[in-house]
Image (cartoon, rainbow, N blue to C red; front, side, top):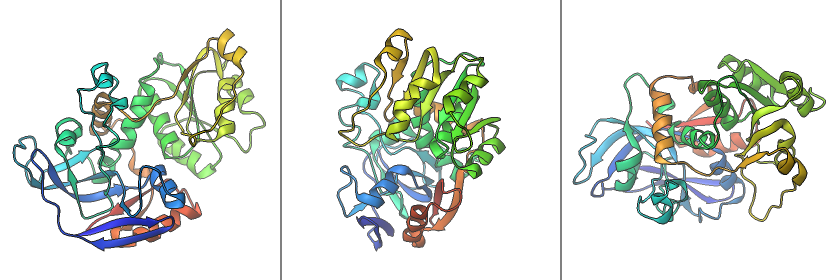
Length: 344
């Protein structure tokens, strides 16, 4: 089998390896689609502390069950499968409090290596966070399960009443997914971005209101003009840029909520107006990862075709061209959102 390795920043190798064997309770997945994401691109650019090189990488995938381990009853060989790359242990302090995203072992037991012909999915993931793919859901849509679970978990931290204005800052793949989920939850979703092509895509997917940050003098003024001078009920930051984090509280109303979804490097210090947060009761949420509940809801959204996700895929590459795919992502040309890596 072929497996993609990140051997150094900017350097990818496709290596031949022996087929993995299914562990007890686990399955071997014949990968059909793997999606690129921001974490993989960051690792490609400069490495990643959780991904010592050389490393197999890629973690958003769908495919077919090629083999099953002893004791597996939920899947059979040939089943189409959609899964995420992690699951909590269910026994630690945080799991017992319903905070499985903070599980003591969830990061240590995650799997990487979706840029390959085959991927071994262990028992703890198969038992909690893997599903049969419905026949009317494409492999490409099914591969969105992991990023969509992150979005669902992030939005579980606030309650948006029907018609509330949820402003999403950032028109990347996650920003568009956030706007789609907010709309599906009954909110008025507004997407703010700097790439007209991406904003046009969001409009085509049903996000009726967008703000072009390059053409708008002041984003806060534009948001107030859309909300009877109050500001958004919720603002979700999806850029991972320090200046945007610091500006986010100015976009919400008194009593509003800011969701800091886009991560910043370790050691970064952020300055907020303390009086604004305190006297206007601005709630701050900084969500991480996802829970099994979020994975299940993400699965339901995909299975029910609540919205389209395939158009978020900008380009498609064969597994043999994995290096070319990341070199193209690095250029930032075109929509440059998510790429699908297809194994045949």
